[in-house]
Image (tube, rainbow, N blue to C red):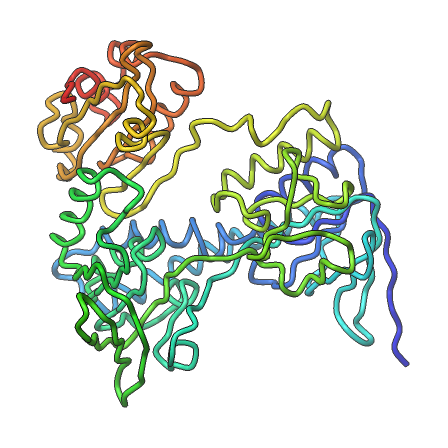
Length: 461
């Protein structure tokens, strides 16, 4: 005989990602009864600490630490073991910190809506239903596998999750797609010692960036030995006895790449397919993203959607800000909105990293803005000796300035420590700090931030 355990809570959170767990902590601290449902015991804490930001950036660190005398396979295996140890510790810590609270419960299992206030977890004797007046959806996103012949059935296909858990370094990794995910793994695996080929359908890498910035980044990647093929339309994958044969068309001609592993880095989509949102009356876009208003409320005002699942920028820190908006709705004065966000930076963790914020020069000129452009190659920045002390002088810094107000409209920083410098620039943009103020500020020495003392005065256009 099947039985169902029925539970109630003040707030039900579906998904243990950054937004969901942050909101859950705040709500339990405020005395509310919270139940959080996560479908996998390998995902406590969400994508970032388990299969995203933390493990991949740890692999960036390890791969850049490899010495010539290190045996590639052994070094790679030891690096993967280090990643496993850290992610396991983070996963356990995330579970203990929430589940250990008196008013919080974590349930492991896949949830689906029964109605707009009830979610069912599991089947048969293990079935649990949770009913709550307020529900937060935080199920994240999932990789898109391209609908190309042979891709989904190939024995040589690997996901980004596979790559951060693999015990064997592939001899040749082919990557379909030259976006952020594809380029990060290309850089990581090339530095570990694998041959890497990137197949990108666009005419150049990083099409959202200005031509000069993309050219420098492409030169760095190619200089590291990554084979980059742009204008390449992948048509199929076929398995042989020892590798995958990736077929593509470039300039009207057919070509192939043979690799013992290939990654389809062709984007991610909101993970909503198994939630049965229709049962709750929650509306989605054609791509499956949960439709939300500026307060992150769905078409059912008591149901919120946070993080990648709502179709916004796929960054952990945006999911964190989503949590702040929802917490403000539930515990505060309800004034925070998504449109409050300005100058949100992003970083591509190749080596050295590329961090950007705001407008590109192309975008500013297309808007007929009166601008000045400040630009300098990292190797020429006298005020930045840190680049020489760590032996990484590749890259470029570029700033788009409003010629009338001296405010910073955008920046692209391709250099050592770019992921840190960009935060200072983004804060200045949000607070209306002028370029001259940043240029004349006092920074520690030697540091990468002090490059601002020089670059903001090098006007090239």
